[in-house]
Length: 148
Image (tube, rainbow, N blue to C red; front, side, top):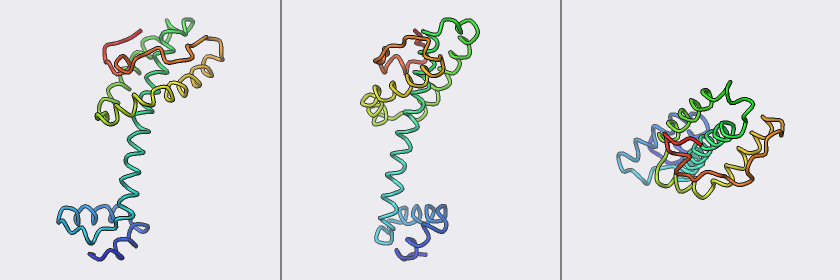
């Protein structure tokens, strides 16, 4: 399989085989045979997926930090669990984080906070007054040892 048209057709039939063939062509520097259209689509999908992944981890960290700090009636029962979750999500986020993804989080921290805020308000039945804006710096959110 070396023709672009064959590779293009393969994309919808067997994505894994398409990926392996594309990788082989790249390694062999046979760039003229690449299915550029689908390669661009795949690369854009990777970028989107990575951004969503790090946003999701950050949202989980924020959720648990807010619950830890503000939900006093559940503190004694849940504090250890929330702290363990924060540690776990920070570790997972750290495995994904690159300079570009860190910049993405910095630029989108307010959006991520709003999603976390919506969740904790629902979880606490709107009984807790959470800050409207994120009370945490990104450095704090990423710091394995920091807790409010």
